[in-house]
Amino acid sequence: MKYIKRVATVMTVLVITLTIALPLFAQNEFAATLEVLNSGVEVQRVNTDTFIAVQLEAIVGVGDTIRTDETGEARITFFADGTDVTLEPSTEYRIIEFEGDDDNFQLTVEVLAGQTTHRLGRILGTNSSYDVETPGMTLAAQGTVFSIRVEDSGRSGMLVFEGDVDANADGQQADVPPAFGIRSAVNEELSDVVRASTFDELDAALDGCTVSVTTLDDVSINVRLAPSLDAEAIGFVSADEIDTFVGVTEAGTWYRIPFDDNFAWVLSSTASISTDCAGLRVFADDFSEAGVSVTTDNTDAVDSNDDSTENTED
Image 1 (cartoon, rainbow, N blue to C red):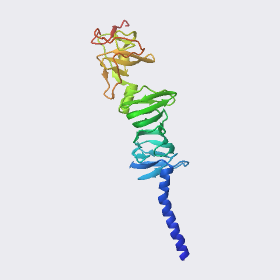
Image 2 (image 1 turned 180 degrees about the vertical axis):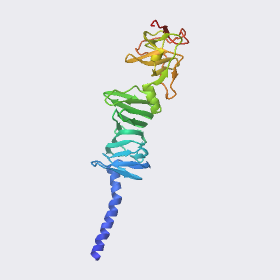
Image 3 (image 1 turned 90 degrees about the vertical axis):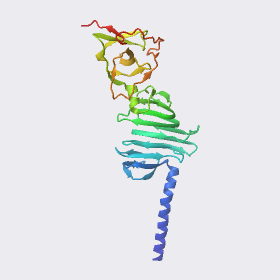
Image 4 (image 1 turned 135 degrees about the vertical axis):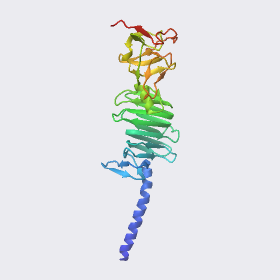
């Protein structure tokens, strides 16, 4: 009996030792600590098929997938200096690679769906990297705070709040500074880098806003290559054909519209923009679609600042 008790005591000590040592080993071997901010968080361990609910905290490692449901929120912290990522509801996220130590490391993660905010607690050294893969583009950060959104279609968007982030997609590269954003659909080129502080603003800047335009009498509106009456007129449209603006000049009188599979400009003082619009993209008054130099003296505009021409059609 004494022998059995002694064996039992040894086994108990061994179990306690392993229980303590395993998290320590995992923290060094793997990547991060997962903290549940709001219930509804699950982890799928590498080489397994089942998601396991996490109630408070867990260690997560390379190959693990973390997801949140419609109410779940989580924070994953990689280092003691506060390098972390926050997962919002309905998000799926995976740790792909982690090598090195606190000073020099290569960290690659993937946002599969939903929205995340990434915070790097320091400026990364030349031997360190923090890369984020999405279905639409790959992002490389240096001492940065930025958010990523991946839609159901895989279209991926990013907003930068601090530092710079390098975006790559389909052989293209773009540097995105603070207060700007970028977007890319799956297997498509990067969008323009546009000023935006929310994803609604990013979408409005790139997709435009719903509008209605009216004109006096039976006239059509000239469409020009640049926001100037001195720019070349390349066609005309009737007011009821214009339903979207994709930009406005700093002066607020010329509007960019989709035209013949490209973009062009119209002058209007009667435009009504949807109240749901988060804000049109703003262009310089001397901007030109064709790169031609034009002046911006619009003092001879007609029809209450509408650049219009008489419509000869019945």
